[in-house]
Image 1 (cartoon, helix red, strand yellow):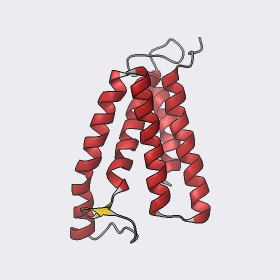
Image 2: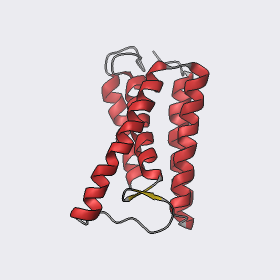
Image 3: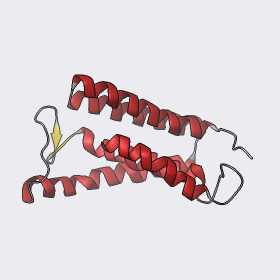
Image 4: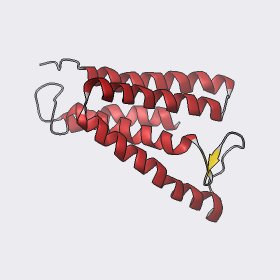
Length: 151
């Protein structure tokens, strides 16, 4: 049995595709913080528009959680930059605490994107093929794209 695609699938898959496309293109031209800010802003725009259009309460809650986690992450960045000196950001662009301004929003996107993928791939809700193995399939989808985004 094949899972019918829903709007949430298209939104989640679309954000991954846009992010990979933008990151790949930017790797050729090295535009730095501007590119990171643009792709982060576009991802948030897609999720906000989806939330407003569909009133998807799960996405709304995950947006809030991702946003809070992104700002809390600034504490870890400060420690890595100032104490351990194992994190170095390129100069340029606006900074908040010791991180580029786009960073809390970028972490919010990462968390929001991954959590919605896991939820909609089926860790309890929707199933790709009617069986209860959606979490395993979600892991198979998330692992490669996580490697591509991090690499």
